[in-house]
Every structure is written in C-alpha cells, then in structure tokens.
Image 1: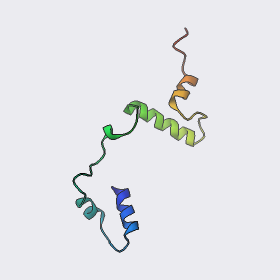
Image 2: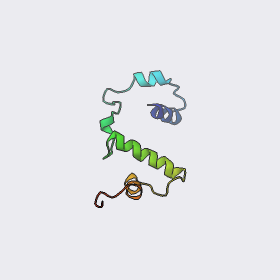
Image 3: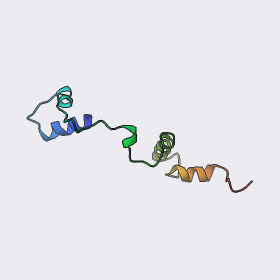
Image 4: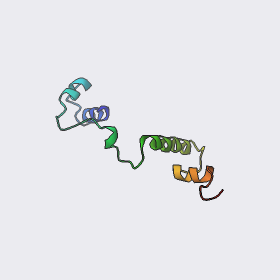
Length: 81
C-alpha cells in the first residue's frame, strides 16, 4: 500500500491525500496479499534459502545464482556412498 500511495501522490500532485485516508478509501475488492498469493514453487523454508543465496550472489560472495546449483556444488551426492 505504501508503494501505491507514493505512486498516487506522484501521479496526482494536486490531490494531497494522507496515507491513512488513502487506505481508508481502498476498494473492498483490493485485498492484502497473503503467503499463499506468492508466485513461487518453493515453500517458505526453501524460499528463505533462495533469498539468502540471491543476496550472497549480489554481494559477490557466491558464483552461483540458484540454490539448487549451490547444493549440487556443496553437498554430497545421494547416488554415491
């Protein structure tokens, strides 16, 4: 909602509306997103791992971008003893 309020204020500079007023006039069909609304194939636990890998990649601490690649590189193979 903060992003929408900022966008509204930028697009309509003559209409000064506080954030509280902006949220009060939210249409009933606009809902707050929930965890199940996320577009991801990962559960929360694995999504958190991917977010950590993304940040480490951004900081140039890792050379791989996906957690699956990191696991293949760092973990033992389950196919071999």
